[in-house]
Length: 411
Image 1 (cartoon, rainbow, N blue to C red):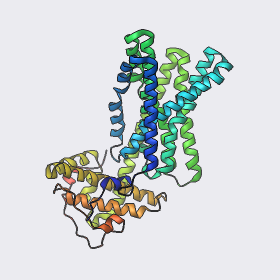
Image 2 (cartoon, rainbow, N blue to C red):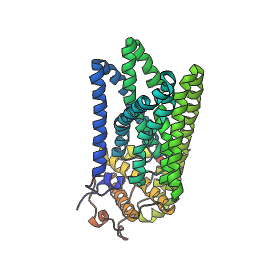
Image 3 (cartoon, rainbow, N blue to C red):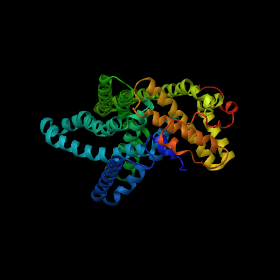
């Protein structure tokens, strides 16, 4: 009997099948990234090396911070990679070309040098860059709507796009600083862009991420159009506020920085509320499956707190080793996805093939429960993989009660 492809089930795709369009887009993004870095290397020679090191140094910490915020229901790795690579490759390349053309063909001839550069930075750059960054988010909304289960998902994708963009854009700023005044100026620019303001681009683009998430979770056609437009406008305005503040000296920059810090706090609060909503879906929809033996009251308590999930994975690791831990992780993710799927069904936004996804998640939960203490992933009947409902008389699997480990609900 064939074994379940756990990752395919969690990603909502057919086992063994991958998106050609996704692969091509990712490859194109990589080509744009390498081309941009190669251009910098050609123009600046070895001076680009310290700039590259400083630009990429904070990236692992920042990316892991974004992933940590979305750890309750993490997104498919391939889409997260695409978001980052699009920002670092395609968005940077398109923005560089369009910003330069706008500057040379319109703002400089129209407004002169000093005023033209300021208008280009405060108006032109926000319009261009938030559009090029946002294209991939619109693509996710169009082609991967089922992957967006809440505001947290939209913010996570948008933040990774922004981090990729900021990383490569910083290379150019660091190189220029080094060429202007050597290592001291390079470190000064790094402190300003890499330490003080590393989250600006993620923050701007998160506005569109929220708009895309609202559109993905709505049945109304007007909302599906208006929400992304409103999000894009919000991204442009925030970007313009920051760039425009530079024309008002340190006072203007300080006020803009404080305002954007408040926006960041609001975003974090929205993500916390979204997590509460997702936990609520677990408590609302999973009790219906207690009669199958796939879910117990203890499981629901465990799934409702990050600490309970973590302790359950540690238990599975002690009981079944690395594969036991992987099985517990699969169970937790599948159960969360099942609850969110029922939420989408109730709100009328689930894909027509949602029963197939439900049955695949149930099959994965069954296999994972069997594997908790055995250190292996057993096979399951082929009809489960094909998407038919699990047999009504399947054996109820015994599993540990998680109440002592899970505690109460997320506080």
